[in-house]
Amino acid sequence: MELKSYSKFHIGIKVKSGVDLNEFKSSLKDFAASKEYTLVGAEQVDITKILSKGFTPGIEKIAEKGDSEIHFNSSAGAINFVGKDPSEISNLFKEGLEFLEGNGYELNTIVEFFEIITEVVFENTQPPTEVLKNKISFDTTKLLEMGEADVDLIKIKNRGNNTGDYLEITMGVNPLKPSKEFIVVIVKRSIDIDKIYNFHTIIKETMESFIN
Image (cartoon, rainbow, N blue to C red):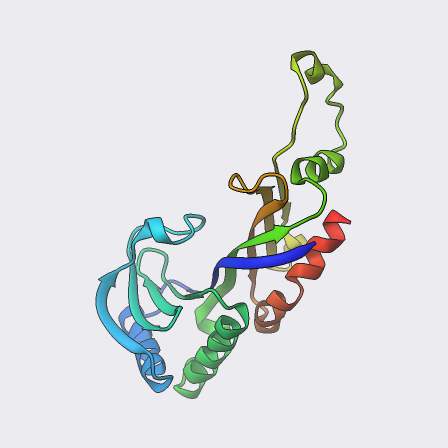
C-alpha cells in the first residue's frame, strides 16, 4: 500500500469560549509575519476548494506562503493551519503554539482541543472494493439475489474512552481510479500537543495495519 498524496492537511486550534478572538487572531497575524507569511487581510476562503468536513461559513484566510495558509474561523472560534505538506503544517502548528506561549497565553487554559482534518490518497495492488468487502463481518449473501454486493465506504470512530481524544477514519474508493486507489478522510482530535504534532508520521503505518 502506497501513500500517494495529501489533498489537504489541516491542524486547528479550537479555543474556549471567553477568549477574545480578535486579540487571538491579532497574535496569530504577528506570528505569521514573524514566519515571513504574507498577510492577506479579510479574504474569505472559498469553501468549495477545501475539505467540507468540519468546516462552516465564516472562515477567513489571514496569511499565506506557498501552499500553506493560516485561517481564522470566527464561527467555530478556531485558528487553522492548512496546506499539503503534513510535516510543514505540523511544524507551523507547534511553532505557533510556542509563539502564543511566549506572548503570555496559557494553552491549558484557553485551548479546548486541537484537531487534524486530512484527506489522503492511497494506492493498493488489490482493488479497494475487495479490500473493504473483506473487512466487514455481516452476511451479504441475501443481497446477492440482486447481483454482486460491493462495499465502497467504511467509517470507523474511536471516542478515546473519556481521554479527550477522538479519531474518525472514513475510507472509500477513489471514483476517478476505483480499481486501485482509496481516498481516506481522517479526523483526529486531542488535547495532547505531541499526539497532534506527531500524528502525520503514523498515518501510513495505521492504514497499512488496517488493510493488511
